[in-house]
Amino acid sequence: MPNLENLKKQAKQYLRWHREGYFPVAAEIRSALPRFRELDDREILTAAFKLADAQELVARQMGFDGWQALRSGALTMTIPARQEQARPVLQSTAAQLFVADIKASCDFFTEKLGFAVDFTYGDPPFYGQVSRDNALLALRLVCEPVFVGDVREREHLLSAALTVATTDEIKRLFLEFQAAGVRFHQTLRTEPWGARNFIVLDPDGNLILFAGPAD
Image (cartoon, rainbow, N blue to C red; front, side, top):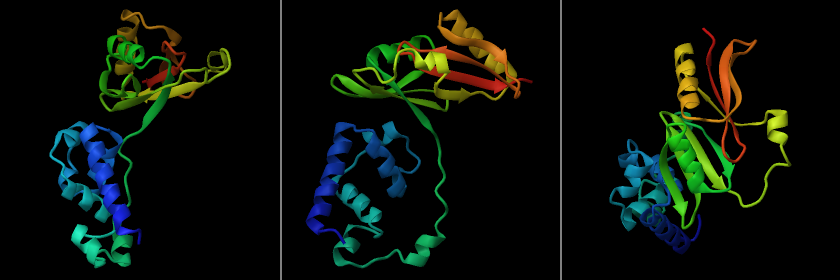
C-alpha cells in the first residue's frame, strides 16, 4: 500500500482541484463517490466537497470503504466482489480539436454551429469544451502548426464525426449551418454506403463530419 502521508497529500490535491474548478477531477469524484453519481461535471464542481470527501475518494480508489478503513488496513472490498462488479460502460466520446485561439474557436462553435461552451480552463484559456445535445468537442490550444500544409483538406482527414438519427435532421442541420455562413469542405450528399453527410471546415482547418441516414 502507498505511504499514508502520500495518500493524505493526494486527497488534499483532489480538494484543491475541486476548489479551482478543474473539470477532469469531476469524473473521478462521480465514479468513486455514490452521492455524486447522478450529477454532471458542473454540478459536482459547485457542490460542497470537503477534505473528508477527498479522503473518501482516495480510499475508495484504493478499494476501501472509507478513510478509516484505509487507515486501519481493513480491506472491505474482496477480490471476488471486485470480479462481480458490472463491466464499465462508456457514456460519451469527445473528439479533441487543435486550435490557435480558444475564444475564437468557442465563438465559431456557438455563433455558427449552435454549440454551447461547457467550460474553458486556464488564464488565458488553453483548454475548453463545447457541446450540442450529446455531442462533445474538446478544444486544445496549440501555438504552432500540427499538420503539414493543406494535408487535411487534400487527404480529407477528419477531426471529428457527429451524427443525427434521421434524414430530415441532417438536411435541416445543413440548411441551418448554410444560413449561418459556415464554410463547407463538402456540401450535403448521399454516399454509396447509405449515409447522407456534409463536412464543415472550422477556422483552424479542422474537418468536422455531420452524418445521418440517407432514408
